[in-house]
Image 1 (cartoon, helix red, strand yellow):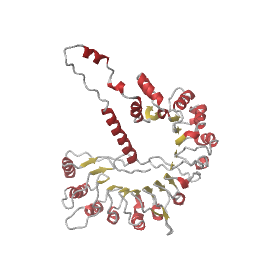
Image 2 (tube, rainbow, N blue to C red):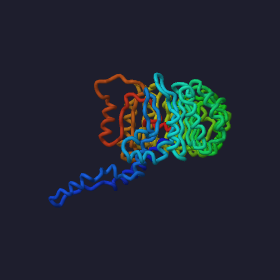
Image 3 (cartoon, helix red, strand yellow):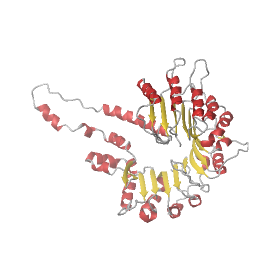
Image 4 (tube, rainbow, N blue to C red):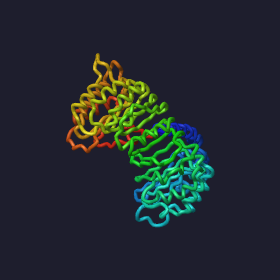
Length: 479
C-alpha cells in the first residue's frame, strides 16, 4: 500500500471519529431557577471523556499504533502497555482489543543495556491478549546478535505462531542470520496468512534464507532493501514471485533484476536498482499492471509499462526514459515524474514534451549547470502563442547545489501562476538546495517573488537544505 493511500485512509478514519465525537458533545446544564440541585447534578455527572463508548476508545487507540518508545535513541515498537495503566476504562478498552497486542518486536538491546530484553512472559502476554488476530512480527538484530541477547524461548514462542504471521520484518545484521534461519527453517511452508515480507541485510544472506518463504499462498509484497535502498543482493532467495504485486530489491547484476521482472507479471508497485550497466538486447518485458515504479540504473531499456502512473528515476537511467515512453505508448496515464540526481537538464525537455498528462514534476540536479537549467525552465515557461509543455502541472519542485538556477525556476513558476489564458493549474511549488547554502543578509529577488506568490495563495517555499526522501514533499513513493 502506497503512502498516499495510507494517508487517505487515516484521514477518512479521523473524519469518521470527528463525526462520532461531535455527537457525544455535552450541552451545558443551565439552571432555570435559583436552586443548587443543578449544581449538585453537575458535580456528580461524569466527565464527557468517560462517556465515550469503549469501541470508540479502541478506535482512537488504534490511531496511535504502532506505539514507539526509544532506548538510547533506538526506536522500539511496543504494544500500548501504558494505555492500560491510565484508568479502569482505558485498561478495559486496551485489553478488549486484540489488535493492540498483535505488533510484536524482538530486538537486541543497544550497548549498555542491563537486564533481559523481550522476556518470554511479555511475549506470552502479548500473544494471549492478541487472541486470534493476525500478527505483525519484527526481529531486529541491528545492535547485537538476537539469539544472544533475546531469550530463545521468546523467539520460539513467535515461531510456533507462524500460522498467524501477516507481516514479517527481518533485520539481519551481525552473525544472526544463520542462527535465526535455523530456527525459522522448521516453519517452511507454514505461513498461510503471510502477506508482507521484508528482509533487510548488509550482507548476502540469500543462500541462508533459501526457501523458508517459498510456500506462502497469501504473500503479495516482498521488500529486500530498506528505505535508503541499501543493497541486500539476495538472488538465491526462493520466493513465490508469480503471485507478488509489490516488490523492492537491489541487485548487483542487471540480469538478476530482469529475471525478477520476468517472474512477476502482476506487479503493481516496484522499486528496483542495479549495480552494473545493462545493454538491451532488443527484447522487452511487458508489465501490463504496473502503476508505480522506482528505478535506478538503465534497466528501463528492457521493460514496457503502458499503464504506469508514477515514475521515480535516478541518474543515468534518464537516458533510456524517452525510448521507454515511446515504446510504452506515450504513457498516457503518467501523473508523476521524479528525476533524482541528474546532471543534464536539457535532456528532460523532449521527455516532458511527451507527457501531456503529467501533474507532478520534481527534479534534483546532481551539480549545477546554469545554462542547461535555464533552458529546461525556459521550455516550461508559458508564453503567449507558444505551445505549452505539461499544461496540467499542479505540483512542481526543483533544486540542486548552492548555485542552482533558482531565478530561472521562479520566473517559470510565475508564468504558470499568473497566466490568464489558460487559467493557472499550479497548487504547490518548492525550490530547494541539496547542500547547505551560505547565509545571506537579505532575501534574494527570487525568494522575494516566492514570498509574494505565497501571499497570493500559492503553496510555495524555499528549503535551504533538503535531502530527498520518500517522506518529504519530493513524493518518491517507493513501494
